[in-house]
Length: 262
Image (cartoon, rainbow, N blue to C red):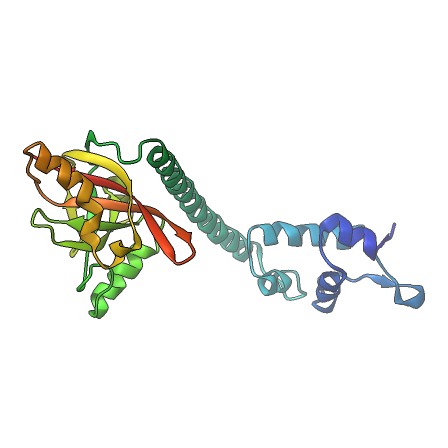
């Protein structure tokens, strides 16, 4: 039995041009009837289904065409190629699981921020790894440090743009990653350093775009609270930038703030 090109294309979810490509590559051999109308055998169709199988494994088009050519690959070569695709798929699956976890983290913390804006609470800051380089903390003129930052940024949104400040009020930018994630992804090498979880003053706050030039603005409310209650900052304070609301030229970063105290 022969099948017309339209039926084959619609069933496979490919274009007529795609079928013509595989014909030119010798993958299939349709019969040309009146007015050059092509029809396809069950052999052609099954070969095209196999093509879809390999495409769903994200193999390159040319590689698949070569495998189906007259000088195609042996079983061991095919097996090795499929194994490589399996390993890549597993890596992608882990990446997407991390992405789902990290996007969920941001979503839930934005929800908490909207519910508990400017509420001062006591909490334990999670253990983090911190990277802060160059004059302002985000970018360095040193090539080696640029490469390290690039590695951290490849793990966004698990890597979180943050503001840090010492107890003297010297604020700067940096990047933070949860301790377990940093260890899993091998982001713990110098110049990154570990921030141990401590008892903290915790809040969510919205600030103005002046934060970008004055990073210590992130800690105004927690510092006021500590001053009013005779508390002293104990180590670096950290504020994660959850998102930035844009309204015309006005920018309002939304922050989650931890300030350790004693």
